[in-house]
Length: 453
Image (cartoon, rainbow, N blue to C red; front, side):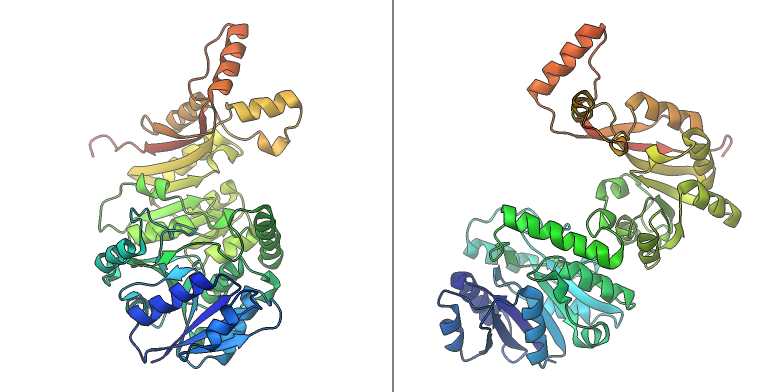
């Protein structure tokens, strides 16, 4: 079977040359075709491409952008699988074999991707190499196919994405509304999943990624492009591709459920189900439930879990009627939004089995950034959300949980903020809030075991 490797270029010949040379070195000949679409580069890229006997080059006389360039390459390809690869990558030992093994492991798998050193959405890992030789040594020891390291994801970043041709034929090409690029991979991932296929991140495979070579990482123009394309995605689908796809690894880690168990887990504020997917990756037999107030997000979460659309209290009533009993409840930034927090939290407690766990992330109301906006008269009502540490503890204990473990995520408070808080405390004759340097509180609480159990 043939894999069509499609690369879109715009200048940066040195990166393109290194990428293609690594493909030649680390990919078995005869298993792939190499198609490069050049978007009117102003350096020697077009000339160099024309000199390569194993490259089918498409030379545009204008910059068509990344999505359109990929579509041109797909239209010219012949492979059973399509691999979209950035030109600022360097591939490694067994990279493609491992990806194909994962993709072909089930007809339900629509696309796969890999780990790297520079990427968003938790596809990057820390590395210590300082040269490409060291990188290749690292990857050679790292890249060993292992199904236990294949993780299902809501979306895959398109720097290195292997897709079944039959899937692309079913869902259509990349959406060119996202020209010149960014968020077309979010859109493609979503359409693959809505067609009934799964996405896998192969955590058994690593390639190098320089990152944002064509767009210019973090420049003002790049940041503006990201925001514009994010808005285009929201207009198309009705939810945020970043906030609603978040994965809270910390809350999943705090569950600490028995390995090999079949836990029933509910997330309140589940978005698209990214955190619940991580629960399933950790506990493969988990039964998942999600509550989400955004209709479009909840509908997509139904691809992951039994989803309930609406406010927490409305869904709570449905769960009670169904007689659902849970091993864990996750509140993702929704704990502080319960309309009747004391009563609602008590009802959520009763859904938990004895020994069941609740984890939550709760914004800290008592932090300098909120105080400053209050004093400047620039704060908006929706920013006045959160709770104090004291309030959280009182609610949790009042609902019937055991003494909670409460930690936090630091904000950017500095020495000047500390002096401000000390001055205010001195003027009022009180002590400085001990947690003013926390952006969010992370809560873990357990329903006590029944007496005699």
